[in-house]
Length: 462
Image (cartoon, one colour):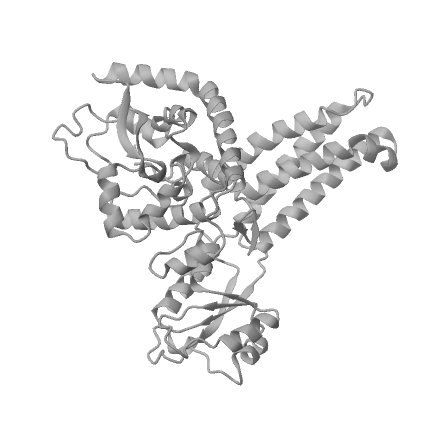
């Protein structure tokens, strides 16, 4: 894995993406060279346009998730097509606009525009095919797990389920782990030191997954030798962060949060995020105005009551605000005054409500909360104070998610299905912690593209 703007991406995915981009840009330069007569003339005439499009294409491609390696069958064809559609909706207009800025003396701009657009389309469709082809080549990362207890077992299961490029070479028990939780056939006996064994087995990474870390159980010198010999060494929390895009709270300690990187809420980052929120919210309100008007009319025709639904939620630093949504439930949904979790197939949801929830139209009025500064476009979902008080008592580190503004959509929303229990809230918190730790404008773009894919496929609707 490699970090790009604080977000982890598979090295193989990055290589594939750069190769596809290079081939596309060669096509663009080749077409321009044919039009002007030589490469020497093409570079000064169109070099800026090619570089600009390359930068945009890199951001969109890496944020789209199309190049991420996933286990066979874990990503449906419909979701891949949804992602591809999002990429095309962004890159085709970009290609047309950027290469439309070629000098007016260049008579065949249309040929270049259409050629690049065709190349982008072919590249995206090929990527969808490769993602679902059983014959697609996959590079392998050989991983040694240091530990053989319950924590190591969870790490192994995580790698097998989430990373198709991972090959587990075995488990090495710690000094204090007398009863392995993993299969005996997978337990390795050291031949020499840990570094010698790892080198002999051609290990690329070591994940330290010791359930028990009493004195003497952590061979720091041997792990340092492994790192100095070029083998990557990760602790348990970093493994979950880079593999699952979450920070698990069951193995988390405050020291890792305090002394590790991330959780930077600087003034510049806050300013950039606010400008992005305002621009995006205004754009989305203008684009979605006809949809919102039609939705309001349908709600009014179906049932009595207000078109909008206002409810107190906890925002930045736990400060309350009134969230605005299209009403999707009956007016008497909570007539007894007792807060309830929304559930799948909730009987309180109206017919129009079922539709607008499935395609997330009910969330659109929250764009006005974004303009007011109460919410961000991307962030942890705002929860009701009643549930916040309960969850803060039941779940460690729950309050950390309130260190950033809540969002209309979020990393947890695109990674985990809709939840209505404390256990679901725990799972979503682990994704929220990843977002709070690593949030950048790039990660926001990743979430927004994933959100479009979720809307197109109806994933997680409740």
